[in-house]
Image: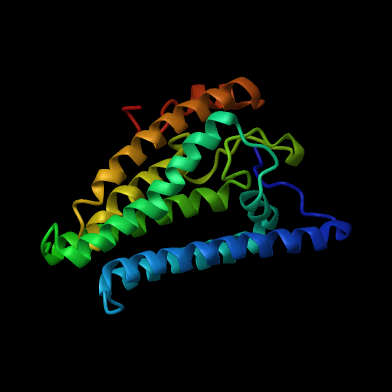
Amino acid sequence: MNSTPKMPSTEAQSSLTAGIITRALQILVMFIAMGFELFLGSGRLNWDWAWIFLGISLLSVAVNAAFMLRNSPDTIVERGKPKEVQGWDKLIGGILLIGQYFLVPLLAALDQRFAWTGVLPLGWHILGAVIYATGLGLTGWSMIVNAYFSTAARIQSDRGQQVCRSGPYAFIRHPGYIGFFFQVLSVPLLLGSLWALIFAFPATICLLIRTSLEDRLLRAELAGYEQYAQEVKYRLIPGLW
């Protein structure tokens, strides 16, 4: 089933452009905030692993943007300002946002300043970087092939949402969340802070809860999803769950 919505009409072009700019500004603010957290928290600008973390993140955003601007620009608008958000998703999404983009980097930065963890072997940093890039890649792939990959758990009837079966969705129903798992758990290793796992682990629990609730919503309200769930039996890990 085709997962790509119709391109916006000429009359909607200005609104589309404004939405894309809004999303770009959101991402810019997020990067600036993380930069302040990392470098002010650590008390130094010459923190190589923080720059590597930001560089990998920025490269991922650039690649995703290149594909989405060409294939589904209205998905960018949806991700910037979804038209509705479930009550439970506001709570869980808020916790995830604070944990992943504020608490984990901040605690890692403070750890860098005060050396709570000490010096991790180089291999752990590299492993963290590889897993982080893999997580971003999997989430980005999911976002590119699924034109309804929103920041909110909702049925996008206003956009004619259909079930996506291509790319990683042919193997698991929520591949984007696997990418998020990799990202959350790998950042502490990449930045060299075992203490940052204090906030990373609760974030992964929130991801599990959100996956379960979103899957239940899709089964109940998205046409064709129940059949898809019978064909692709696993939510996150083939053969397990």
